[in-house]
Amino acid sequence: MHVVSRRSFLKSSAAGVAAGAILMDGAWLSHSRAETRDYFAAEFDISDALCQKVLAKALEKGGDFADLFFEHTISNYLILEDGQVNRAYGAIALGVGIRTVKGDQVGYGFTQELNEKSMLAAAATAATIADGSGQTPVQKIAKLSLSNHYPLSKLYSAVSVSDKLPMVQATNDKCFALSREIIKVNAQFADEQRRILIVTSDGVKAEDLQPKNYLAAMVTAERNGRKERAGYNLGGRQEFSFYTPAIVDELCSEAVGRVLVLFDAVKPPAGEMPVVLGPGVTGILLHEAIGHGMEADFNRKNTSTFSTMIGKKVAEPFVNIIDDGTNERLPGSINVDDEGTPGQKTFLVENGILTSYMHDKISAKFYKVKPTGNGRRQSYEHYVQPRMRNTYMLAGPSTPEEVIGSVQKGIYIKDVSNGQVNIGEGDFAFYVSQGQMIENGKLTAPIKDVNIMGNGPKMLANITMLANDLQMNRGGGGQCGKGGQGVPVGFGQPTCLVHSMTVGGVNA
Image 1: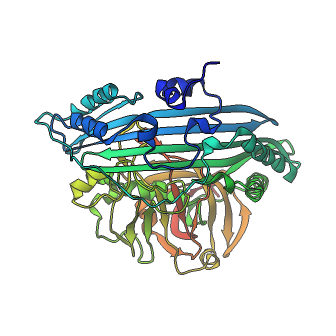
Image 2: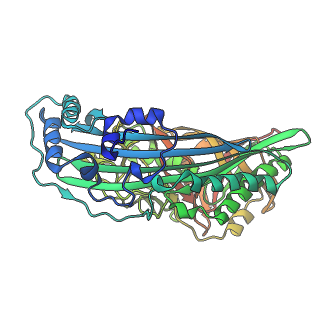
Image 3: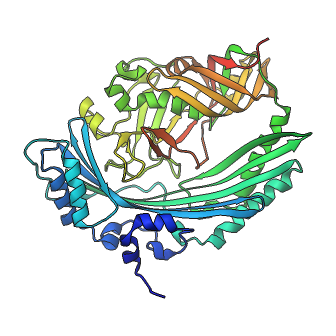
């Protein structure tokens, strides 16, 4: 057998590796220690001098600034269905994206080959956005010292399949054991470790190691010939040690409970009525219907309802909304964004007043403010956009019981799915996957087959009560889509009363 060194193997062809991979198992794929210091220099000979040469090429036609985004990502998926592991595969992404910015215009090139010739060719492509005299990047590159909100004691590439399989098998077995009505279980575990390096023409260098993972169960139940389906997942930027037997038990109990309650669910009446959003996962409404409208590119282009609202009231004084990259181990947490700005916390709405948008470097320059650390991209093949991280509403002064008790007739939403949002106007529609009726201030029958519709800015203005039970969504499997790109995000909120929303239930 011919032995190939780790560096030679990875340099040869990242695309070929991804196409033929089954499971990326073993420390030979990367350093066995979970370290980030000078990884790309050690593994791929990416020196400061080489970066400066490539940046100079990217600026040779007069761009305002340029940056390099190196990425090496290893992903694995293990899926058990019908009592056996029937899908197990992995992938590797390796390459560099090179961006040149002129005003608000972007030139972009990328390559999978981390050698000088290929990188200079990609930089020349990016440089064509400008047409003028060249600029010289700063000569001194300073590496940022970053906080770490998701430390790893062991890389996921060093976790064997034999370590993961018992957890997936236990998820399958536990779901079946919880109810005789469970007839099908899909259990899966997905993990990713993403190493990135950003080097900018203004002398910033930042390196990060970003894990992302989740354990999920999708279950189907049957009762009297009728079938229902539901699922649940837990994860984030967790260590592998997070996935204990207690986590498996919690996951399975929630997934099975969610599917069994659907057999007793009713369709609520249709019309305008008060809606109580439960804590945690319903923050997806905040994310979709409101959060996107506060991303700065939509406002810079005057396509968002919020484009003229900075400094103005958008909600009651007890409403505070934050977008945060510094939460511990949540999917949207980032030590540094994808253009070299350290992760940070940004108040979007403070005491009911819209105080900030979410900025990347381009929008920050346009608005003459500092970047907020929201410049994100799906991979080295994609350009940067202002994107959310972990977006949530702070707790209010009431108790959950007081919020629910204030409603005589309405619905309580525990979870939603399959949403559609018009970001410009903020109009939305979501399917309620888990919820209950509220009658005379009490939670009563579970509900199903109902949509809620409304307008994000109006929903924000119609929040009349907030409880003191802020929760963040604990899942790790979702991604946010924008401009053809997906990135991991987090969201959350406390129990929240929206005075009036349109419920598409059953007409009287």
